[in-house]
Image 1 (cartoon, rainbow, N blue to C red):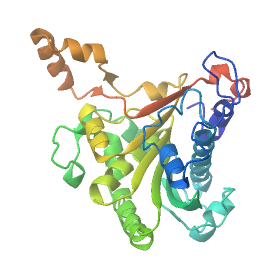
Image 2: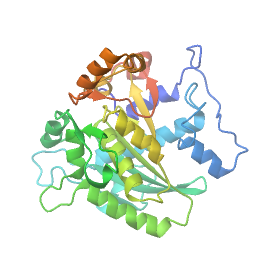
Image 3: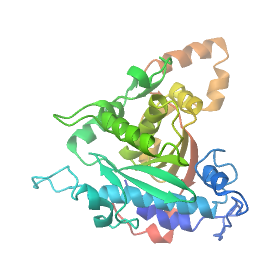
Length: 327
């Protein structure tokens, strides 16, 4: 992966206008609106209509803010394979964000194997942020390669038995490792505490992540919305994420009200895998009887994915700040 969220900041900041010229965009979200209306639009309540091209200043600031949380998740992780604490959090829970250099400093936080969380009170509401890092361990690389789609299990499936996601991502989310609970169980326990404590306040939940973390973020948001029937607005802001599920999974996300904004580097191959996508014209042609049979056979191979949510596509090649950045 060529770019982490902090590196993407440069391109986002220099957003190109409709004519391709770099412009200093003005916030399209009216300042005269009530704070609640403003932050709900930035959280995607209207699917970011009118905010992506050109990129709204307020939304840009939000994207950068969530990128800082993802960067903190990377900095908290012990990558040193020779360390006795390898693959754990480097810092104590109470000082994790401040020691990782996050601008929020010592706010309430928790940590798991893949994620860091923070509670950020701003714009008249409390924003609960769950941030995931990308692939780091051998086990995660192996799971990344398990690209066949598999049916969602348990209560995450609801009544839709055709909803499918990438096998490895689902395994990483739902499987316990030794005595430690699964990521899914940890998320549900923490969310129950947060909703009990802050449920009467204006509240939003934002799940963000990079690469593998982007996939886990989408699963997490779906899980929160299916587990907690009165959950507040749940939004995914993902960076450089792979495909994660089929069109039935996409439909399930849309029905539950989960909002997904994908920040995509057009030069990043990770965002073009796994599997392949049947475009809309192919779907319309499937109404022809012979082609409908062919499409059904293809979909049964468990390799047909669907693009999810709204996309903000960027290009590192167009940004001089990123021209010399390596891995």
